[in-house]
Image 1 (cartoon, protein in one colour):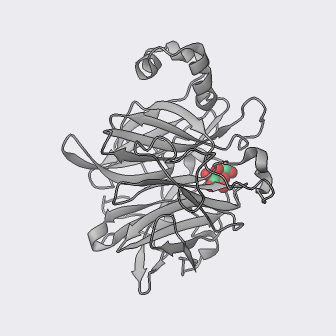
Image 2 (tube, rainbow, N blue to C red):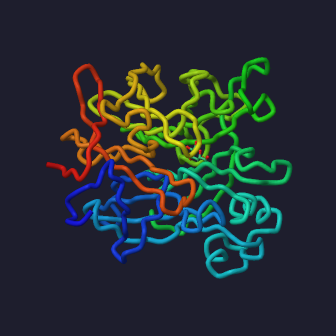
Length: 365
Ligand code: GAL
């Protein structure tokens, strides 16, 4: 971005912060918050400075214009050992936790074993807290794989730049039928969460969107008033009211939901790990659906890989003027730290259709 007006788009040029350091905010989300009277953009994402591991935690950048990106640092920190709870930063953030509490939290913050992916943040007007949810995974006792834990982690802070206090990780809603097909998770691992995102509706209801049942099915669950847990107890939640199951058996992930002119849109990818695949999108009248499948939003050459990207979020740049930007990750499996970001404008077409044109070096004009 040489001139602070141009997005490299499908070219996926490296992006740097105002100090010239590579942006580390993968699987991220960008939105505006007003903090102490000042409106700014906040970009949250995965810190992959050290590649896949040690896990770098959650990084934040802020900006007045989406181009000059100020490093706000790692806002949710991981640890080398459980003794790190004694360090000043963790003491300040977590206070004096007893050993049992430390052990509970350490499972998800242990740099050498944890996986922290697709962090998303929303602001709760009532509590005045910023709430982060992320895909909390990684090796843990009884599960040697990186994606066997399959939970959602929650953290809160008074400011979008932290320090975020991690509260815990949880399984979420599940379809209450032990004979159903739960994919590779099986009934034992019901309520599993892998790729996820959040959506905050105009009426202040918040939703978590996540791949479950071994990634077969997309769940959309209502969060409670504080946005720190599910709205309804996991074991008594009502399917169709407290949560919905969508695109059953269709294996979708990389969920990116947004709202435009009375319609809700959901862009997703297929499930092929770090390798890109074609995107799909759906439209609904409510965040929990029912969703109408609309096909592939990409019209141009390279659509079979979403122009070598996987959806992370859609940035509502100017909702009133219909300016929305798709942000995707161009994962580099060989060098995850150098994974790129692909920003493309969303085109709104008749009949609630959208298109993601392949564009390079584009501007808002
Ligand atoms: C993708 C997912 C990424 C990451 C990756 C690991 O399917 O979207 O967030 O988990 O798999 O292989």
